[in-house]
Length: 132
Image (cartoon, rainbow, N blue to C red; front, side, top):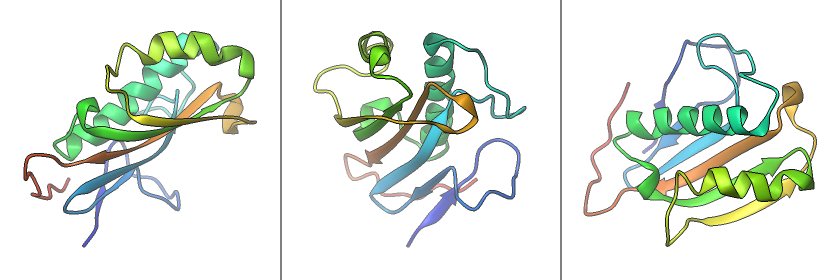
């Protein structure tokens, strides 16, 4: 069984912000866009990454999880030169043992500098689905 996780205003986009099952949560790629306005929050990596992580946190919270439950992260950066700076910001949200991670360099929609998607796992027998 799977349930959609809804955050922010409704949209006609052909994907969900997140999907949850009894044991896992899949958060779609998120960038530095304000969830209410859909606008990019800034033109620097720090502001976009902080907003990206806030967007991911909203989806995790809606499913009763936190960053501590994340087991896999996929990172998309617009330029390899951003890697070290990104890692410094990323460490604010995760601690050892860090989630497994992949970093990819590519063009991103809307001129974003970063996009992240994550997979989280329900732990300690917490398999209750929550819906919003």
